[in-house]
Image (cartoon, rainbow, N blue to C red; front, side, top):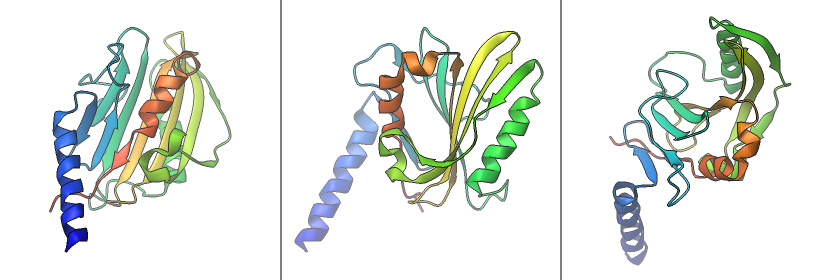
Length: 185
């Protein structure tokens, strides 16, 4: 009985935190949350990111650097739940965007999100550099299946060349803050 009460109190605390923290973006319907660095006005939660279908976006307000999250429900049948195949597919997709040239890709390997984000889940990362309309860009995309809800998740970091290194401490904090949640019934 005491364990049940403690668990209920913890869930209540988490629910309050998700609703009250201005540095936290939580999407109950897709079962994912992400934080921006606390009390840091350089980062925000814009509506749009690098991809038009992103469901959560954290972006630097001055430099061109966004972190987009797209979640696909396991029941949608939209595409593969194979993280490696999804990363390969995104490479082909992005390489074919109008105005994208000089595409260079690093070898793909299994890894984890920085700081153990999303429950230290195993993922595949697409790491590529390219030029878009003459501007040098860098992109990293972590693809994985969430442990808590079995949804497919793609987290994309995209920015001008050198932005990840410039903002690595903040970006690694943001990526380590990613949590996946059980979906409401």
